[in-house]
Length: 301
Ligand SMILES: Nc1ncnc2c1ncn2[C@@H]1O[C@H](COP(=O)(O)OP(=O)(O)OP(=O)(O)O)[C@@H](O)[C@H]1O
Ligand SMILES: [Mg+2]
Image 1 (tube, rainbow, N blue to C red):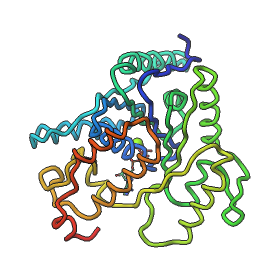
Image 2 (image 1 turned 45 degrees about the vertical axis):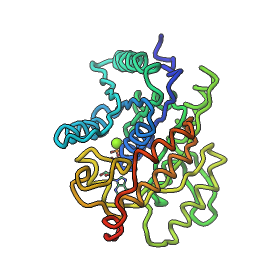
Image 3 (image 1 turned 90 degrees about the horizontal axis):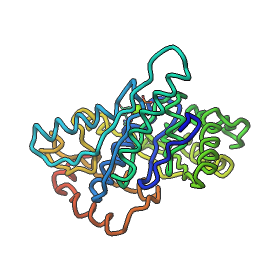
């Protein structure tokens, strides 16, 4: 295989989290999608292609440690990190990265139902390869006009698109490439992250602008995720809002914020229209009981 080819995963459904802007919520969303699918009873692999920062790897490691320390049966995905290539020549580096990626895909494509891939916030070879493998591409963006730049230059008043961004071009060419290689389409979904709980005119404009340019750029818009401090608390203990929301798991009493976040991310996952059976969603609902209402309801979000 040459480095021009796409190491397409044929059996597993590949979900890629991508955005060229840093800190938009790729890793957090990747882990939540992975755990939600695990709780539905699916076999899930996670792949970290942000091989310098390795935040998803740390999230998974934190989860394994939490499970060992508490004795809780926190489900773990099969986790893989694509090793960065070394050397001087770009072609040699890319060849190493390509074969490292292919080796991982060969191991996981038939052994898992879903593969969740986290990518770095920069245009790199591994990031491009990941985009060209996506069956579902999820792009979280911070809910501000500044962050819309990652898709293109959008006039805040007219809501028109004057320039298509480098990232949107990258996605479009990855999707085209994928279609040529194996005839499969990529479903691209943009989700606003860190929504303010307060109504703001900016928020209305951002959603209006996104809807306006969605058809031109070829993505769907999903409902957003609110800014909540709990996301920062969950990372170091490796937990997600799809785990049992009790003191033993969280280390603190569950709050309304956990329940609201769970509802929001569950809705986000539903809007991804992943190939999940209705029975699996039922399994997840059964496996993840709502936190005991009195404790959760007692604390404001
Ligand atoms: N909805 C949210 N509310 C509050 N904090 C959030 C939210 N989403 C993400 N965060 C926090 O923002 C930080 C960045 O999130 P995350 O690491 O998921 O982004 P990223 O896109 O993967 O970043 P990078 O580009 O650096 O890889 C983390 O500390 C995370 O806990
Ligand atoms: Mg990240």
